[in-house]
Length: 294
Image (cartoon, rainbow, N blue to C red):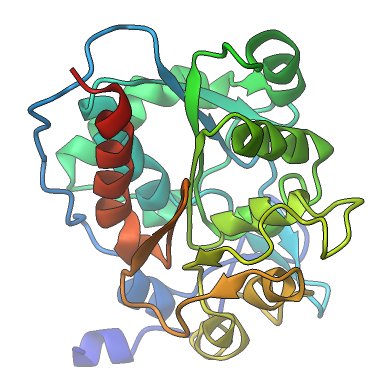
């Protein structure tokens, strides 16, 4: 760690667009972001070219996450966690449709955009029209889900925006997850994205919860309760903890730290953090191509 980084402020930075809202501190960004990712441009020899099968990416449409102290974290989807898995799926030959619960634009943590990573920036530009005008999830359910759907997988990226409630307690999200399980579709999610799995518990008991007994990787609660506050990444304690909430429903969390770990349990593919983005993208592309590759 350089002396220059040590001298950076650990106070969360005010977001002038909203009262009592904050971006991560300059110091935390020096520790948690980088100008390039580890995306390695993997080529897929059995790339799908049939033009039919698609992946549904469900993004967060809310930027502000209210903390216990009343402050708001200015968040959204993490661009690396979103775009690197999308790059692998895209390069494997599958089309991607973007949706949000409301149909409002996908919100991004633009402060985490790897601005010198040309592949990631190109993916952002390619899908920007969909990020700005995504499908409304209820319309996707009505028009495009069913036994003969073109969708073969659901991707839910991370970023603290997944905790805002639009995804974690959405009945539309619950419907999509139940459809995915009932129709043997893959579910791909990482970091805070597994908050989507909580939606499957809305109105359900632990005994009937469809992910009871599943093993996953997820962002560690210990970091959100400790280091993320200490270095000013978030402006206070979260109102609830993700891994703890999933464990109460019978989910088995495989990790207690952030190493870039990924895990597959049946058709649920998970990763622990932005560090897992490239590995999860490869895991997802490989799993899809095993069934649908040329």
